Length: 80
Image (cartoon, rainbow, N blue to C red; front, side, top):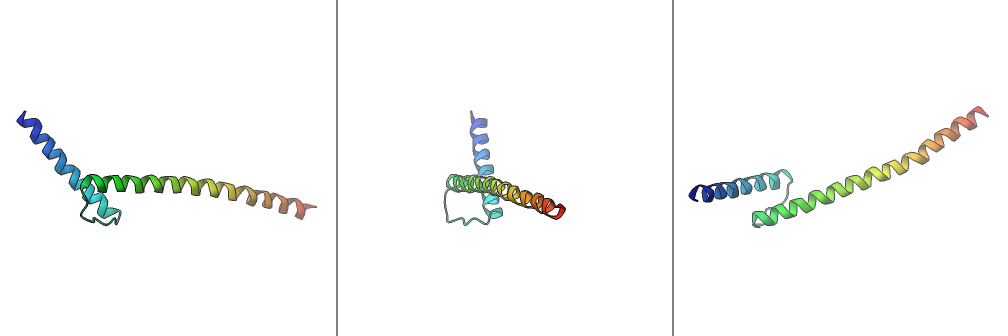
């Protein structure tokens, strides 16, 4: 039982260290929050970034279609 408790304590320390490193890497303010709160905030930020990346990719794709159509029309006009 003692071994399990020690392992849980070690896991907690490792979690705190990883959250602190991720917080620093993301330039996220610490604000003296609990590690669980910081982790949740980082996870929400990551989720938002992923949604924004997907939205951007969709918009870029939509912009390419009219550009390709314009190029096709230019080729047709220059050939006419």
